[in-house]
Length: 168
Image (cartoon, rainbow, N blue to C red; front, side, top):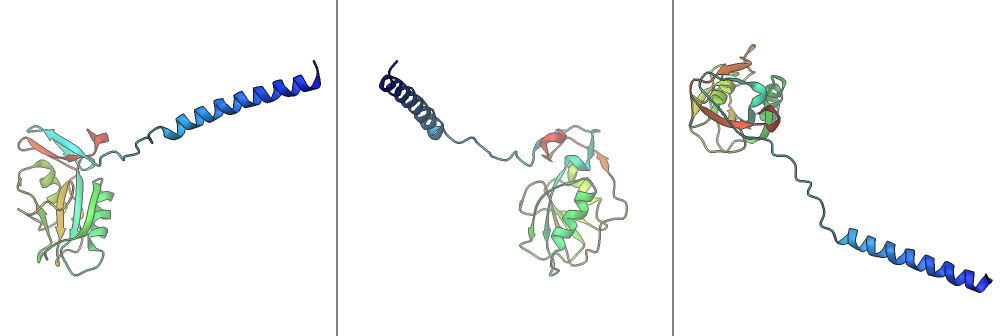
């Protein structure tokens, strides 16, 4: 084999490799990007009368209904230490004079009752849906959670609430 024939064959093989690499690169570059959507914080969970509902099954959003800075975030941390799943935290659209309000139209809902029992003097009242899970608005009189809030409650009626997927 002559040197010129060897050079021609080498250039041909290298050219074919370049075409194959260019085609596979083009295919990879034009593929849609993989979806990296985060898993949802919670899904609807329904429990029947008598079923136990535990803190780790309940998502909670906390809002500051006072003039004290950082109250919602600090309360959220305390609830998370007790096993609740933190959802949203922000300032409330209105001030709350008492300790805390649980904004729900379902006062007998097991998750609502479990969250309300973490606060001494909390009231369950109708309110707008500010975030995900059980809505807590801490007020001017709030100091801290109960020393020993229950870890679970039994459902007194069929209840549906926002629960993390892994706790289903």
